[in-house]
Amino acid sequence: MSNTQPVELPLWVRDREEVIAVDAAVEWREGRPDYSHTNQFRSQERQCNHAEGSLNAIAHNLVRTFEMEATHKINPQQWLSVVTEKFRMSTNGGKQYTAQDIIDAGTYNLFLGDTEHYRSTKETFDSSYNLFHTAFPEGFHWELIEVLSPPPNVVFKWRHWGQFKGNFKDFAPTGETIEIIGLSVACVTEELKIESVEHFFDNSAFLNKLTASGCPFHS
Image 1 (cartoon, helix red, strand yellow):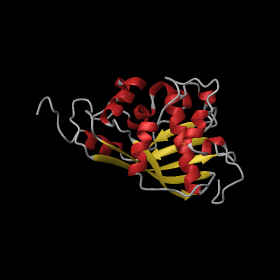
Image 2 (cartoon, rainbow, N blue to C red; image 1 turned 90 degrees about the vertical axis):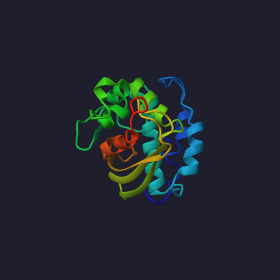
Image 3 (tube, helix red, strand yellow; image 1 turned 135 degrees about the vertical axis):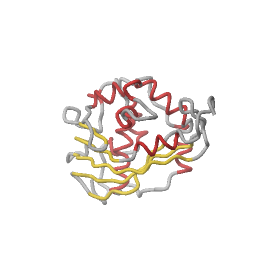
């Protein structure tokens, strides 16, 4: 990973759509993912447009590939973005999870844990996915803001955002843009595959924004 574009970048650090297109024998959760709807809104609302081949662009593509694989590929041996046997993920210094843990529980459950407004132990992969996609029908987008440290320990700042236009459980949508700013540390190999990644963000602030409107059925 460098600021000078190599002759040919590995597939997993190219545009996510290129990775999706190489799907021979891939075990998809519910068929090949189609991001055309959310890509439309993301392109209109993103704040960063990294130069092709730059360190920022390569890291951005790697994380987006990882997110796609974690959500849609149910065989961890088919994930291109990670070293499957070594891979571990944690949030805010908490428990470390494997690729199989992510497939079983889903990233929302592992990121958020048990809080006042969300109990991951009561949710499944499907229920959590449906819950947040109902709340953010136009997508809950992600983009890398800036790489702060180069490989092998890549430190980067990022933002997640989306328009709160659907119910979150019993809480009415406000239509506002809800944004999370976070920091991650990814340990990568020379081939730019992730061995571990730690995420740091305020998950309580995110849930507080989703529940600030009050309950539409008991107001």
